[in-house]
Length: 205
Image (tube, rainbow, N blue to C red; front, side, top):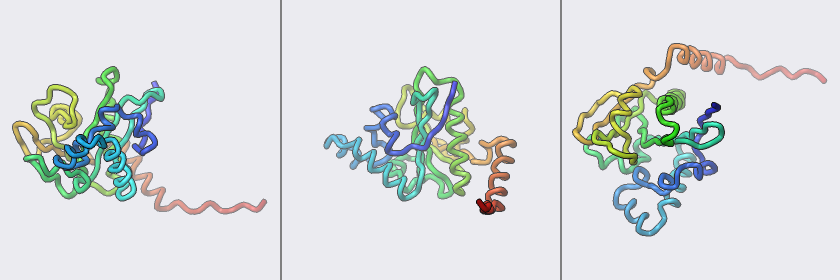
């Protein structure tokens, strides 16, 4: 089974489920989000948000492919780009953290460790970019797939509760804890080799 995680761009945005492509729960504040739905423009707003974050901050998501079939995705960004986060009773997200907004895996592919792989991939990306942690608002009463991730799932992949709440606790994952010793060594080697790598000498023809 070949699986790969690819940065989310406008080119592969159509590989997300339609209900996710047309959802602006996190991307707009509650009033603007409701207005976009009434106007019938949530998909355009989603594209505009992803385009703006890509240009301003960089990669803000990953799409998961198994044997070239899109089976899941994860979305994340600094809280400054996530207007809805301020509406939660356990906000704000810590200034040294990036917010894990939402994630989804196709039912037939759940329970295969893809959720943990997604979190590790996001952690590697953010660690390289100088961030210390990922934070997320969990749903402690989760019953069905929704924009807010189940708190139990976040806890199962390594998050810890930093702000308890009966409905929407805020959870945090220290990036260093997600990487194994082997990955830490690989990361250190990457940085070392990147620092000492020189331009190859040109050979005469």
